[in-house]
Image (cartoon, rainbow, N blue to C red; front, top):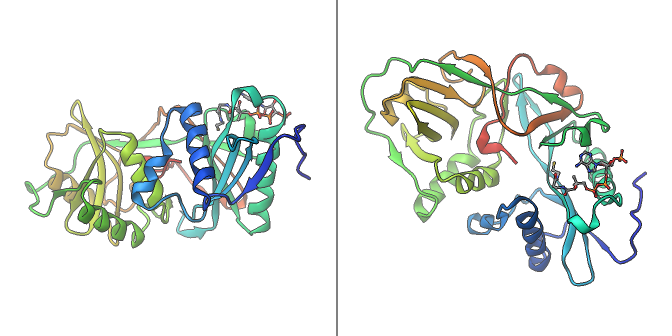
Length: 297
Ligand SMILES: CC(C)(COP(=O)(O)OP(=O)(O)OC[C@H]1O[C@@H](n2cnc3c(N)ncnc32)[C@H](O)[C@@H]1OP(=O)(O)O)[C@@H](O)C(=O)NCCC(=O)NCCS
């Protein structure tokens, strides 16, 4: 049973994203807590329509605590898994230590259980918060190696901009019709986070490769970091590398590279958050994995 926090002054709201004032109050909470602007999503069509937010609001309409679930289908070892992701967990400092977060977590977990989600997944810098609910940490790995042999630059490559309406439409189409970037472990969709993550990090480049996939990448100090590839077909790494035509000495693929026709050596990923998962389907995770940084939430 969900416990009720000790405050009569707060209003519990669920599924409130259709109310612009309440959405904006959540944007403020996350800006104040994490210095991130999730309101940027408004320019790409708004938040994930599968979101199931649970929030406490004060009498002035300020959101003082929130925890959201959303549908995040995954492929794990070739099987489609109906997974729920959890995000936007925050409590304003003056309201902490009173059980608000516990209450919201329990409500969200009860909701996704009732809706039949078979796996739960989140990213956190406070794993202990979730261990007591049966989540366990899966270490993430990047896949490292030398660039494949390429046959010079590929004329099909074109830089895409989130600010260009035509490019944005193209990216949405590619993301909607994407083949999961890996059979071993990957999201099936996640358009909203792809756009938001591209906005958050100005070093991320988006390039249309072979007219079939938008490739998200970074290049720094001779290292090409491949973050994601979204399209109906995933080009092999040799085609991507040829299209990008960079003087890369080393490649780091930030997702399981099983569709890239290339093998990299797994090396521990030094991110500051832990990937935590619970549910039977997690037992099918076999070997090193990484959630594409473009699907981070
Ligand atoms: C972490 C945070 C959400 C906790 O909110 P809260 O309302 O104070 O938490 P609660 O009072 O409901 O406590 C819930 C449980 O978490 C534990 N907890 C609280 N803060 C914690 C912390 N910083 N680290 C580890 N555990 C913590 C409590 O001991 C309690 O445990 P219990 O259920 O076994 O008694 C809040 O401090 C916050 O917003 N921090 C900044 C943003 C953040 O870190 N968000 C989580 C991102 S994954």
